[in-house]
Amino acid sequence: DTEVTQTPKHLVMGMTNKKSLKCEQHMGHRAMYWYKQKAKKPPELMFVYSYEKLSINESVPSRFSPECPNSSLLNLHLHALQPEDSALYLCASSQGDWYSPLHFGNGTRLTVT
Amino acid sequence: EDQVTQSPEALRLQEGESSSLNCSYTVSGLRGLFWYRQDPGKGPEFLFTLYSAGEEKEKERLKATLTKKESFLHITAPKPEDSATYLCAPLYNQGGKLIFGQGTELSVKP
Image 1 (cartoon, rainbow over the protein chains, first blue to last red):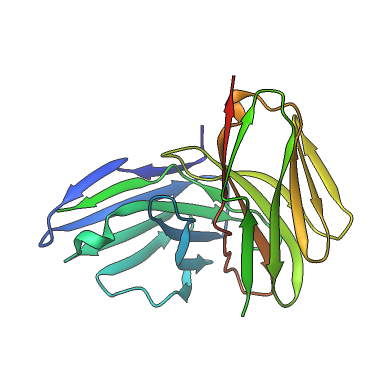
Image 2: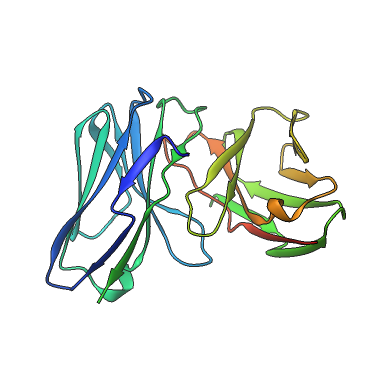
């Protein structure tokens, strides 16, 4: 079982909906990440939070809005998505040092109709 | 430009048939490399960190090695449960940004 928990596991939403993805970790990690993964492709970095502050935004469209309420929680707010945004959204956490591996959750499978 | 290339893209083995996966990279300031395993519909699972050229790490049937320009993941006598996509990600001075290779999809048939 992964120590990074993501909810929901599956989400279907229309292009006019607003939804949120949630991620939680209790390993005391100080960095948290959102990745997007399309079929047969590697995970692509979207956002990095370090000590609850946004440190990296990989030029992600504003229809994706991250939030880090505290060091254990990470949200991704979704609004006005497009069908091409359908993907597996992965959350990860790490101790925050350059040499610390990322620990991933099992993702939320998002389908935009 | 920093690049990571994994080969082959796909590998089919018979159970017990040993082989190697390759991860080559051109990155500035390489400080190490991660190997991950990913099962379909799951998140990547951390396998190894290698920090310096010449370093080797082992876990069950897997052994990872590192040189200055590439890393190998050797699989000895694989079993069907080793079937997965194997991803590498170089560690370099990128401020928390981890970039994955395209992955090698391994299939082991009984």
